[in-house]
Length: 471
Picture 1 (cartoon, one colour):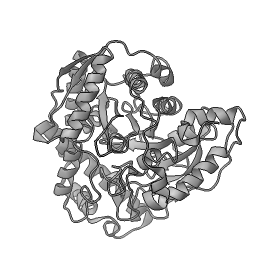
Picture 2 (cartoon, rainbow, N blue to C red):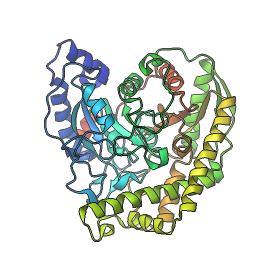
Picture 3 (cartoon, rainbow, N blue to C red):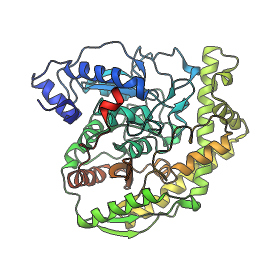
C-alpha cells in the first residue's frame, strides 16, 4: 500500500471500501500522528468520543477534524476558541454535519481557531497559539489555522474549515495547502441560521489535493429545507470538473494592494510566476482590477462583524444567565462587541448596501474576465505575535488584520468563489499561495483550473520536516 502521507482522502476511502484495510485503519493512524504532532503544533483543541468507522460513502473511514466553530455534531464540544463557550456541547448535527456523517467521515475532534474566529492568526488566549509546520515561530494563519496546520503536517489529508474574510485561503497560503471558498450559500449554514455574517461566512475545507476539495463539496452542497435562497446548482459534479479542461481563459491580474496597502515582493513574485505558468498553459493575462470601493468594504466588514458577534455573545449570555459575558472575552474582542452598541440600524443597512455594491462591481469584472488572479495575503506567514490582538484596541487590530490580506474579503462580500493554490515557495522554504477567483456560481470553472495547475505544478510532495516536528 502507498505510504500514508501519499494518500489523499479519496484514496483512503477507496481502500476502506475495497476492504484492503480495516475500517478504522486510517482513523488509528491519524490519531497516532496527531498525538505526536499536537504538542508542537497545538492544532487540535477538542477530542471527540470514538465512533465506528463506516465502510461505505465517498469518504468511508476517513478521519476528519472539524474547525472549532460552525459545524455542530450532536453531543460534541464546540467553543469557537473562547472561554465564554467553555463546556458547550451541541444538541444536534448541523445540516453540513449530517451530510459529512452520511459521506462516511469519522469525526475525531476540533481544530484550533482564534477567539470567535476573528483573526488572521490563530493565537487565542484560551487555547494558545497554533504553529506553522514550515516554521514553528510563525503563524499558520487564521481563522482556520489549526485546520491548515494539520493538513500541512500531513497528519491528515483533509480538514473542515470556514471562510468569512479569507479564513480558509490565508491559512492555506501560509501552509502550502489547497483552500477553496465556495460561492455564497453553496453550502448551507442551517438549520439554526440561514446565513453567517450577512452571507459572507462560508463552510468548506482545507486539503492536500484538489480532488478531495471538489469531492467534499459534492457531498455537502445544496440548499437546506427552508433556506430563503440558494446558490445556482452546478452543471455536474465538482469532482468531474477537476479533470475537465478549463479551455482558454481570459484572466485579469492584480499586483497592487487596494487603497495603498503594500504587498511584499515575495507574494508579488509568486503571483507573477503563476501568470507565466498560465500563459504557458495557453491562457491570456492582463493587468486589471475590479472597481469596488475597498475602503467602504473595510468599514462595512467591521460593522457587520461587530453586530453579528455582539448579537451572538449577548444572546448566549441571556440563555445561560451570564451577568458579565465581556469578562470572558479577550479585551480586543470585548471592545469590538461594545462598539456594536453604537452602530445603528441605518449603519448596518448601509453596510449591507456596500456588500451589494461590491457584488455589482465583481459582476462587471467577471463580465470581462473568466478568472481573477492576485496574491492571497500581503506577506508570507508572519511570526507569532505580529497579528495577535493582545494589547491592541479594535481599530489598531482591525487595521493590521485588513492589511494582512486586503484582497480576500471582496470574495466574501460578493459571494464569488475563490481559492488559494500552493504554487510558490520562498528561498527560505516558506509557502506562498496564489489567489484565483471566478464569477458567482462558477465554482466548477475554478476547480477545472485548479486541476490543470495541480497537474502542471504538483505540490503534494512538498512537505515540512515531519521528523523534526515530532521529535
